[in-house]
Amino acid sequence: MLKCFAISLLAVAALAQQPAAPQASAPKTAAQESASKARKLNRAELDAYLAHPDQILLIDVRRPDEIASIGGFAVYLSIQIKDLKDRLNSIPRDRTIITVSNHAARAAVAADLLADNGFKVAGAVGAQLYEAEGGTLLKIAPPKPAVQPVATPAPAKGN
Image (cartoon, rainbow, N blue to C red; front, side):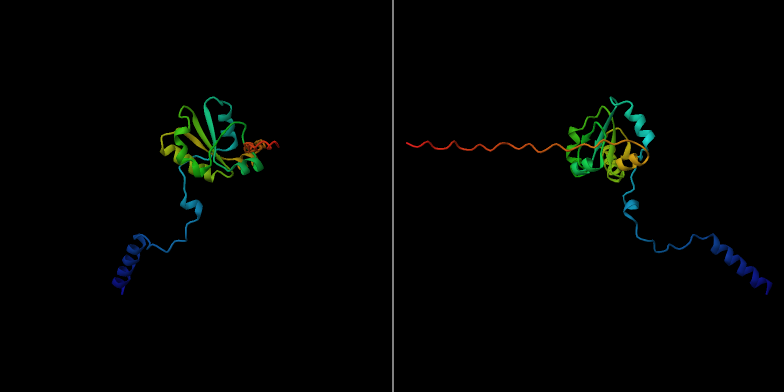
């Protein structure tokens, strides 16, 4: 009986040392699937970068209506996230880049894309998060589209 008990105890100990069998995992959330390498900057970190405007470039990847309704920063390059890959050649490489979106999710994706293409990226910031931490955003009205005047023919003069 004692021998059976000892064998049972050894079996239990051996099972305890084995890794647990994989269980069905819950579906990943969008945030887990799109894990970014980009650092998410807080207000103090962004303010420190903004103190040296000649060394940084803010790239805001939001739509113009988002920038107008939520607010943004005084100087930035506006390239929507959907257009960023096609516009890499127009982005200066001599400055440290900080990407901007509302909550830093799109900005993080943009930061990863830029870093993967050789740009020096400090991180990503969410404009609404910045404001929630006490930062001030500027309300910037998007420029009105330039409308070219349509040439109207001169009225015909009667003979």
